[in-house]
Image 1: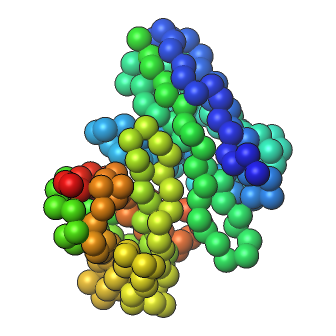
Image 2 (image 1 turned 30 degrees about the vertical axis):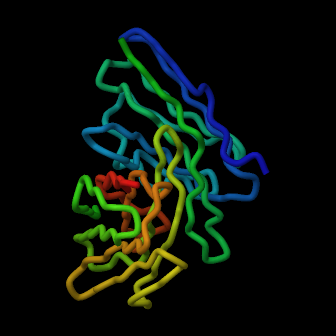
Length: 115
Length: 112
């Protein structure tokens, strides 16, 4: 199993540009989570999906952020327009949901720098 | 939503000593408490978890205790080794779904 796959691994963009982060969860996992990690705020849960349906997006900082999960094997997190304060590492994680295991398996993260 | 506080933010111990990290949570309905370890530049990985029907759980050199009445839980690492140096995150959740919320992390340094 390849684990959770995220792309790109690094993204450098200018303020005002649109940024799209991508995630492929582990096959068979039904839950997908997007986190943002910064030194100041730690690991923040932005949004999560169960069976491709958004369950809780209360962590999404503002309307500039949006997330989709069109199918069980792909999700995107989009920032439009991007701002320097969006610079962070964005992690995607997936979890089996069924079977009583709630362990979340994290991807390698996308390091976003907005200049 | 859930609010998780974690202390201390940094911790240094001598190799072979024990390390203790403490967390408190706000939502009494939370019933799942995992601990994640994140090495520098790497992704967080689960090291141990506990559910609210259990007061203590142990796995080799690591153990977690839970006090639901006081709404706090702790991670204990015994016989620390240099490879235990990392940032450790506690989390709490599970009351409304399978999501949980992380504490702010503890940077543990084990001095050889």
